Amino acid sequence: MKQTRDRIGDLPDGILHYILSLLPMKTAVTTGILSRRWRDMWKNTWVNVTKLVFDEEFINAQTQIQFVEAVNRFINLSNGKKNGKKIESFLISFHLHDQHQSSVEKWIEFIILQGIEELDLDFSHGITLGELDDLHGSFIKLPEILFSCNTLMHLNLSLCEFNLPVDFSGFISLETLQLKRVTITDEKLENVIFSCPHLKTLSLIQCFKLHSIRIVGPDLQLKSLKVVHCWNTYEIEILAPNLQSFHFYGDLLYGYSFENVSALVDVFMSSEGFEHTEPEHDYINILSSLSHLKILTICSGPLMYISSMEEYNRDDLPITFPNLKELQLQIGFLNMEYLGYVFSFFKHTLENSNTSDASTKWDLWKPVELPPSCVFAALRTIKIKNFHGSEAEMRLVEFVLEKAFILESLVLVSTHNSYSGGESGDMRKMDSPVECVSQSFQTQLRILEDQLESLPKASVGAKIIILCEEWKDESTPFPTHTECNAELLN
Image (cartoon, rainbow, N blue to C red):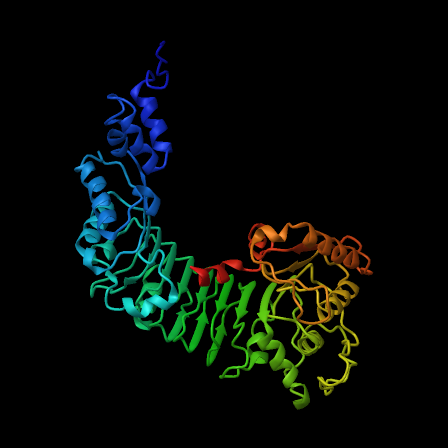
C-alpha cells in the first residue's frame, strides 16, 4: 500500500510555527501526536505566542486542580524563554477559588514581567448568581504586583478581591476596566477612577459592596459607564464632562445626580420589574438634567411617575428633548394602562404644542386618549422591547407612525418565549429559537407584517423591523442595549 506523503510536514519550521500560532491552544497541542517531528513543534511555537487563552476548552479540564496544573505546565514551559517578546493578552475563564491563590499569583507575575496589555481574569465562569453567597471569603485576592503594572490597557476581573496597596499610584495606561462580582468598596473605586488618567470605559456588574458610586472629576476622560445589578448601591453621582454613554440596569436608587454631563448623548436607565418598589424618584428632575440626549432608553418607571404628577401642575413640565433621535421603551407587557403612561410621557416630553391642558389626568377607567398635539420632530428610530402584538401595542405603533415625520426605523423586539395576535396577554409560547422559524409562527408573523405595512405613515421611507428573537437585536445598528440584559444570564 502506497504511503501518503506528509506535504504539510515538509514545510519549513518557520511556516509550521506560524500555522500553529493561528490555532487554538488545545488544537495546537493535539498536533504532537502526528509524527516525531510534530511532537515538540507546538512547544517551540508556544514560546513565541503573544495571546494566551486558558478556558474550559483549552484542556477540557474537569476539575479546578486539573485546570491549574495544565496552566502551570504551559507557564513553566516558557522557562523564561520569551526572549523579550511581549504578551499582548492573557485570559483565564474558569471557576477558581482561593485554594489556588499561589498559582494565580505566579501567573500574574509572569505576564506582568512580559509587558501584558490586556488581562481578563474570569474566575466566576459557570457560577450562577444564587451560588455567590456560598463563595464569599473564597475569592481570589489580587497580588500587589498587579497594581504596579504600567503597561496594562484593558483589565477585566470577575470573582476577585480588589485590595489596593497603600502606595497605589494608578494604572497610567489603563483605558478599559470591567469589574464583575468583585469585592471593591466605594473609596477604592473612587481612588481607581481618580488615579487612571486615561480610563475611558468602566463597567460595574454585580459588585455588591458598592453603596455610593461617585464618578466625579473635571478632568476625567471617561466616555462610557455601565452599572448593572449592583444591588446594594443606593445612589450614583456623576460629574464627568467627557462621558458620552451611561447604562444603568437594576433596582431603584435613592438618588441620581448628573452634573457637567454636556457630552452625554446615550442613556439607558431601566429598573424593569422594580417599578413599584420604593424609593420613588423625581424622574422629572432627572430627565430635565438630561434633556440634551440623542438616545434614551427607559422602563415604565419614569412614565408612571410623570403620569402621576400631571394633577400637580408642576412648573418643570414639560421636559423638552430637542436632540432626541432614538427612543427605546422597555416595558414588560404593554396593556391599556401602560399605554396611558406612554402617552402621558409623550405629552409632557415630546408634544409640540403649548395649548394642551396640562392638568388633564389619565383616567385608567376611561378609554386611553391620544396626546392632542404630539409631533416627533427629530426622532429617527423608535424601538419597543417585549413586543407581543397586543391591541395596546398596535395602537402605539399606529400613533408613532402617524406622528413621526422623519422616522427611519420602527423596531419591534419580541422575546423568544412570547407572541400574541390577540388583544391581551394570551401569548403563544415558544420553547426554543427553532420554533421562531416554524411555519405557524412565520404565518402569524406575515399577518402581523401585513397589518403593520398597511398603516399610514407620516414618513414614507420609514421601515418597520420585527425581531422575533431578542438576541438578533445585538447585531442591528441600534441594539436595545442587550448587553445589559445578557449580563444577568451569566
